[in-house]
Length: 291
Length: 160
Image (tube, rainbow over all chains, first blue to last red; front, side, top):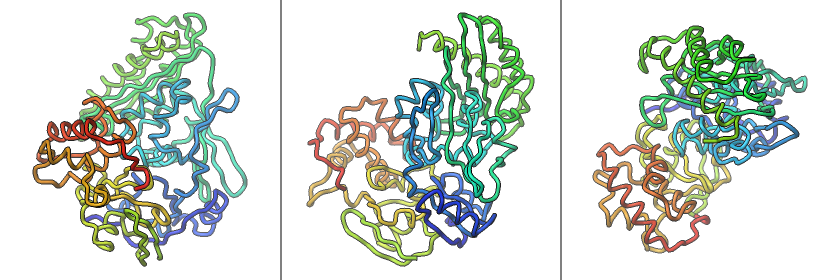
C-alpha cells in the first residue's frame, strides 16, 4: 500500500493567496495541481513536502484563450481541455498531436498543463512541444510577474527556473504567419512515457523555411530543443533532403541514455526519424494541406 | 481536517488526515467498497470515480481536494433499483471475469456514452485505454459498452 507521508494542507482561494502561502511556508511547501506526478512521488517518498498548497479550486487558471496573435494557456488547464480546444488545435496542431498520446483519457482529465511543465520530467511531451513552438512561461512571485522563454524554463531534470515563492501561471504561444506544427512519439504501449519523441514547428515564407522549432523529449536534448538542426533549416527550401539532414543533426546533438525504455543508439535513431516525420507533417500543415 | 463531500447524492462529513487518498476515503471511511484500489500508480483505472462531471483516478487524488464537491461511484450507477444500461451491458455480454476492473470500466463507459451516445469500437477502446483488465477480457468489455450504447435510454446522468 502506497500512501504519502503526513503533510499539512492548505487550499488556495486565489493566486495571491497561493503566493502568500508559498511565502509563509517557504521551500518546504509544494503546489498541488493535478498531482499526477507529485502524489506518486510522495507515495514513494521521493519528495516529502511539509505543506501542500492545493490550487485545484483556482478555476480561473483553467483557460485557453486568444489574445491578439498569441494563444494563452492557464497553468491549471487540464490536458483534456487542451485536447478539446478548437483554438489550440487550429493554431497549434502539435498540441493535439501531443495530447492524444499523453497518458490516457482519465489521467488527462485531472493532470494539468502547468503541473506537467513544472515537474520537468526529461521525458515530458508538452515540454518538448512548447520548446518547439518557442513559447513563453509567465511566472508570478512576490515581486510581480516575469516572463521566461520555454527554452530557459527547464534547467535540468526535474528542475526549473521557478524560484522560492513563485508559481507558473500561464503559457503563451506566439501565432506567426505560415506556421505548421506536429508531434511524433514512440512509446512501448498506449499511454506510456515516450521512448523518444519529437515536436516540430515550421514557418514558411513561400517554400523557404523562415524559421523552425524542434523539440525533443526523452533523448537528452538540452532544454528539450534541437537548436543546431533549427539553425541548419533556417533559409533552406523545405525539401525531403533538407528535412532528413535536420533529423541527422538533431540526433547528433542529443545525449540519450540507455534505460528500461530502450538502448541509447535506438533512442538516437528515434530522435532522427521522429524529427524528420514531425518536420514533414509540419511542412505539409504549413502549406495548408493539413493531413 | 474536516471534509464534506456529496457521494452519490448523499452528503458526508468526516475528519480526515490531509494525506488520505480519495479511494481510501471512499472505501475505508464511507464503506463504499465498489471502487477498487488497484495499482496505486494511476495506471490500472480500477479506482475511477467521477468528481463532479469528470472521471478520474481516485488513487492519485487527495480526498480533501474533493471538499465541497460531488463524487459519483459505481454504487450510484443503478437508479431506484434499476441497473444502468452500462451495467446491463456488462451482464448481457459477459463484460467481466474476476470483476476487479469492472467498477472503473463502467464509470468510464458511462462518461463516454454521456458524451458520445453512439461510439465506434475504436472510440470505446480509446476511452478505456487508461484501464487495465488483467483477465484480458477486453473484447467482451468493448461489446458490453457497445451493447449499452444501443440500449441507452438517453437518461441524463449529469445529476449523479
